[in-house]
Image 1 (spheres, rainbow, N blue to C red):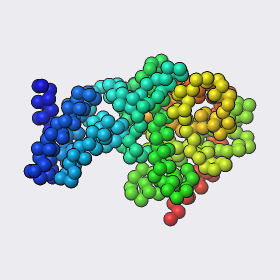
Image 2: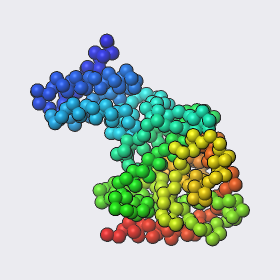
Image 3: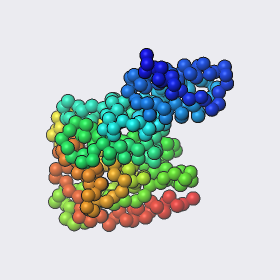
Length: 346
């Protein structure tokens, strides 16, 4: 009871609300705080930040629906409400990550030991959403020794990057493939929209690690590639890798499919070239802030390159005969130039 009395004291006076709705506002805020405190275990700092956000945005129009939306949003990773709670919480970074995984319904499949999530990220969280940077910084703080340890939570956090990438690909397709555009055209449209609205657009980046080929072919620069995957980064964290032929297509590591595979060797043997290309060379998500790979105490190496045995089992097996070229395939520079020119076109 004392805890609930404390929650009442956190309720902020609304900026714009009529007296007739004040009782419903207090009741709605209180019910939400009880749910967040008792069932999701958010701390006072997080709850205080959310009540301030509610007080600044709530209005007289359909108040009950507004609180239903707040409840749904606070239980959806990547939403505005969740981001407010996550960023403001004074919990230890490791506890915040466990909280995030719990709300996602994240667990390891009993067969492959790979990440399965029962719930999705917020649909409105696009590749440049501030939540992704907040998440990346929390991972850096929670795992100062990197993501190569043999630990269940570390394994889930490492593999989470593949779910984030799949989410971002789905966002771009859903938002920018409205008239039959292909993936390349959709990403160009995303960048044009970002530039028009002062948001973060994608930048070219080396895709050497995303052009792995069977080791017998990878002698220096890849010879006579039938395709050359190229990469674009949004705020460095969000990554897109596109295979340009036969039709420009985003390639991702299909964690949702491979986490539950029963017979891993048989699955890998049955892969088509396109499926193996996606599995071996697909995009992920960077927890580091910049590409400082090769420098002393590289953060990119610590959080995004060196992950021990924590990659999905199917991907580890599929990659065994594959290796990266020693240099960036020459075709990539031309593809990036063509892409940047297309973004600048009116």
